[in-house]
Structures are given as structure tokens and as C-alpha cells.
Image (cartoon, rainbow, N blue to C red):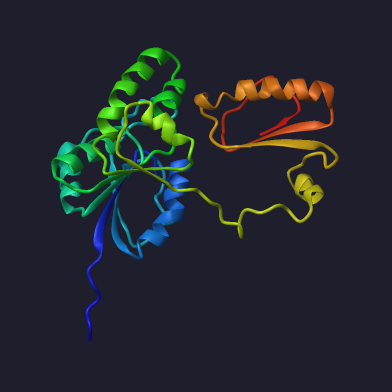
Length: 259
């Protein structure tokens, strides 16, 4: 009987993963089932609170996290020896952030001569600083200095849309860019057959126009500005409701809002 060719090992290094849900975690949750058909997958990720479930037949190495949050996330602790061992095992390293885990993986991938691919999901040097209570300008300045140092170690950089390319190149990041357009599962995410019934199920006035927001309630999302804009619309068109989905933070003094 002919043996199957051995799969290459793909190390996915990310500072955001299950059981904490956000855009990166959702992306990996959707794409890993396809990738594991072609690779032996190791995921290096933070050990967030909660049970890790939903993805089978892969190895997940969870790094301990600090108790103190930065923005709305508990950063992973530096574990140099552990990361070096993981990168040594890998044939390819694929990073999804420049937090402690992503940065360490990039450092050792370059040092150990492993092919390094990074997916730049967002403008990290700008958005991360906006998630902080104080020191925004200093943090943004520091990250802008770190960003080219890390991303210039890559062989390929993936971006989700064309407009990200000039934003990256403006930071002095020179490796090859590949645009990987993101899609959705149209079997799961599709318009309701009856908007009226869908509104009623959410205890919304079926006659109102609903403006929806879906995503984390992080500080950098600036939901206060969204609410101010909604109030202006609501003043002119009273039959409107703002629907916020994706967080547990309670908002005080918000009228005509469903969370």
C-alpha cells in the first residue's frame, strides 16, 4: 500500500484565539479546518479564560497570560524557549499579530531560517493605541518604530484588501504583498426571510428602521461617536433603533438602543 506523503508542519502564531472571540479568532476558526487537510497544524496562542473547543485534530500550545489587561485583552507572557522549540518544529510560520506571541514567532522564524508569512488584519500601529486609556500618542509612536522591524522579516505579507497595501508601504514595509479577500459563509449569514419576524424575535419594533453594529465593544471602536451620529439621525427620523451586537459592556444613558 502506497504511503501518503508526510504533511508539512504549519505553525500559526496569534495573540488572539479561542475561547476569546474577535475578528482574528473567527478568521482562524473558519480557515483552520481547510488548512489541516494539507498541513499538520500547531497553534501558538494565549491561554485565555474558558474552555478551548470547536477545532479538532490540531495541536494548540497555550501561553500563560498576564492578569492585567492592556486595552481589552490579557497579553501573553514571553516564553522564548517554548517559542523557539515550536518554530524549530515548523516548516512554515504564519503570524496574525505583532503582540508578544506574534513578535517572538517572527523573531525566531527569521533566526532559524523558516519561511515567514504574516497576515496583517488591521492597522495595528493605529488601532491598538486607540484601545488604551492613556499614553496613546507614545504607544502609537513606539509601535510605528517596531512595525517595519518585524514585518520586514517576512517573506510574504497577506492583506485583506487592496487599500491596505499603501498603508503598509508607507511604514517602510517592503516584502511581497498578497491580497487575500475575505468572504463569508453564505449558508449561515444571509438576509432573513422576513425582516419583520426577525425584528420581533429581538423584541424590536418591526416598524422601525434598525441600524446595526456587530463587533467587539472595544475602546478603539469608538461606539460613543456611533451613538452621537445615531442621535442626529433619530432626531430627524424618530422611527429608528440602534442595535449593538457583540459585547457585554453596559452603556448608560443611551436611548432607543438595543444591546
